Length: 254
Ligand code: 13P
Image 1 (cartoon, protein in one colour):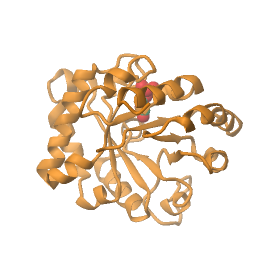
Image 2: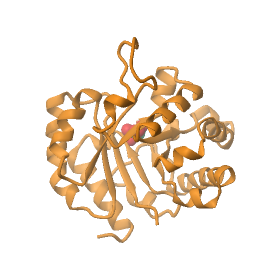
Image 3: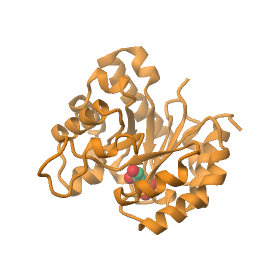
């Protein structure tokens, strides 16, 4: 059985004070929810402060990015060594990194490798753009992105995959639960093809893109979808709490 997971990607939002207030506001209710893995991914500067707040809770911490080199003259970058011990997870290959910062499949592969080698679990993001979707190229694009970052060891390192169709991110226009289920089923099929059924059955594949407290239950009723990577709706304590508790309810855990 795959443990459902809800991760909040706060992106470039919240000052340190706001991050601490936000996590304190959500923590008591979220901590009560059992059977769901719950993760928040604040900006780098807030990681230490948020880590202190959640230290003795069931809430886990993730970073939003890393650089693959151990240390050195890489102005502005953060290494795995700096994050290891502080975070459990790290988001890698988010479409905003790919599109706004020009990250390539090659760079993303190096980042995932560096994360796993330093015991950070990657939340590895893949997804097609609107133009690719409309041209019927979704499966081709996902295959390419997946194959470029697909080493068996990554799965043993606890890698989670997040399917985030770019057209659904921050647009308020989510994929339908059935669409997302079908595409995530396709990704699981890719994993099985490359690494075998056992790994495919155990890897968690999340959906991301305009997930809210109102639509999470529909996603979580689908058999292939193991949780969600939530952007905007993770920035309000009450909506993130509802997303987590509805995930548990949809899976019969509460
Ligand atoms: P939204 O939930 O704001 O659409 O963002 C999704 C996302 O990019 C999560 O990583």
